[in-house]
Amino acid sequence: MGTDEELLGRALALARRAWGATHPNPMVGALIVEDGEIVAEGWHARDGGPHAERVALAALGRPPRAGATMVVTLEPCSTAGRTGACCDAILRAGGVARVVIGATDPNPAHAGRGVDVLRAAGLAVTTGVRAEECAELNLIFNHWITTGRPFIAGKIATTRDGFSRPPQGADRWITGAAAREDVHYWRRLFPAIAVGAGTVRSDNPALTRRWREADGTVREDCGWRFVFDATLATAAGAEANWPRVYADAWKQRTIVVTSAAADASALARLETAGVRVWKMETTRGVAGWAEFSRRCAAERITGVYLEGGFELLADAARAGALDYGFWYRSPRESAAGWGGRVEWMFASGFRTERHGEDELLRGFFDRR
Image 1 (cartoon, rainbow, N blue to C red):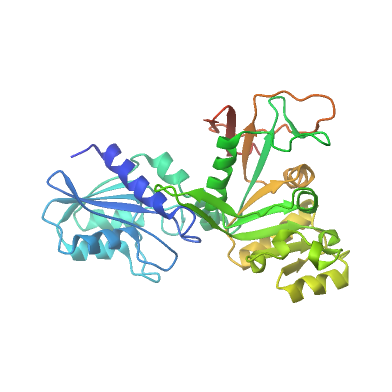
Image 2: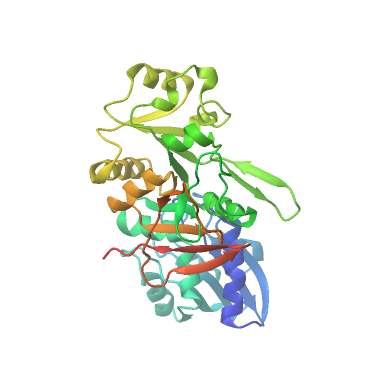
């Protein structure tokens, strides 16, 4: 049998098969090990579906043999919920003598209760194995379940010296293909993507998630798409000239965040076309971001990947609305005409990754 760390690594890989598909629930992977061999596997595939432990038990198709080990990336739930408590399922199945757990349930109302239930029933429980990786798997869920607010992350690409806005006429791509592919990886995790009106007018982005399966098949889907446009300038012209997010096959997944200054006729035309509109008193500053967060929470939109432009990101940062940051830095240096200087400060423990020639810094923001 592999070590606990190796087994947790396999459980993490299983959990990631549901990358971004379980909101508002966490991603979880589970294994059953007998006599040193993995005999069953499971993962939580979607909200409302069976939890990973139950999937693994069902895949086994029989009671686990005496002395079996259950390996799970997140503490088994101890309350019934919609699918029944996983602690009860493990105990009823019989045979499991030991449970190896990665991360503790972040819900303050539940944290540690599952461990207590299992130990009280006589099972040996090992906790904290690859705990940091298991917790990071569920950045969005962890924030949502502890605060009741959406997890808002900013993404920006800059030159090595921190400039994000190329001069007019320059190539708009600052980073390379590998970094852009990584952006789509993170887009898939977040239930929603958000941009400002300037980005929509200048780039006409699709704001979808695209990825390549192991067999080479290219996939595309669409989460929620937010456009911050205080006056509805993006919908001012003829509908034939509207940006693609108001007219494509996923237009009903687009929500325009606007203000009291919104043009009434443009608002009506958007809604008639099937685009949703959130009208707020203001879209900027502390008040605007607080209202946006409340609206997201009310609709159970648990995470937002804020891609810019620079002014929208800067406003969110000043308002303290950004919980997390993804900063892609190219090796190129800026020159005359560059703007949008970024100076993000991360809290300790942020990560640095390489994607081709580019560098990604990601982590929680320093709130000091």
